[in-house]
Length: 249
Image 1 (cartoon, one colour):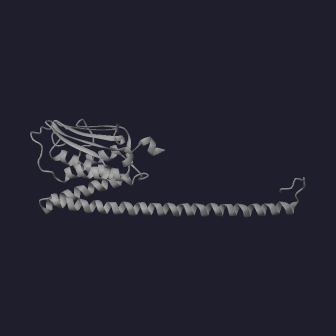
Image 2 (tube, rainbow, N blue to C red):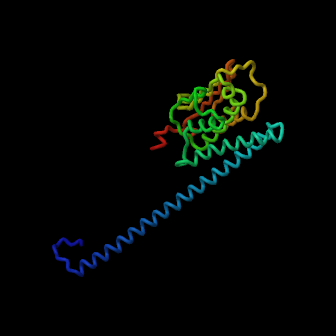
Image 3 (cartoon, rainbow, N blue to C red):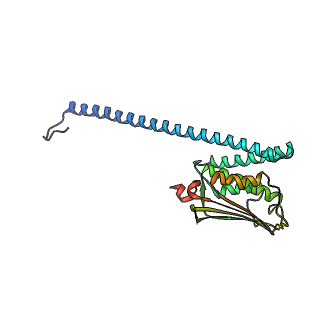
């Protein structure tokens, strides 16, 4: 085959070359299969590690929820009701994460699912606005719980309870001390507030303490005369937030 001199190939030569080509093709195919199996085994190992990490974090979250809910509850019935609602909120976020690639979830979907659970995911009373931002699993879980507590409070005492009130939630990216940051503004209007509440329950603790711990977020809750306003601000880089286009890439 490498000869520089012209020659004729007889039937024996052609048969030999065909057999040699078949052996070479089989060897190449086997090599490719082995490489694919190695890659699959490596990927399975990565997925198993990620699953173990997710399960461990979920169990820790459930344990924390149980302890803090029990501490803030006046009775067993109150504990059972609040704990069940918070478990469902965690489950809803997990359901979003298991759809598609499970690598990230849209901020708007995380917000809408909690509003929908309280019967207020659309309509003139609820206004949502913001770009397509995708959240890492950790950030989605943290914000999912925060949205749950805000929606629960709004359905019991705020804009989701009163017919003439309105809830406006907006989010965007801004420049800040930590570089590019996400700014979320939860604003309820049409809800008269004479004096701010003095009792700080689990919901307020989740928003004002857990988010700074989990996301390094700056959280501020203000009680205006016409309704509550909660602003959440955290680093894009530190929380694994990306645009919808970046996630697609």
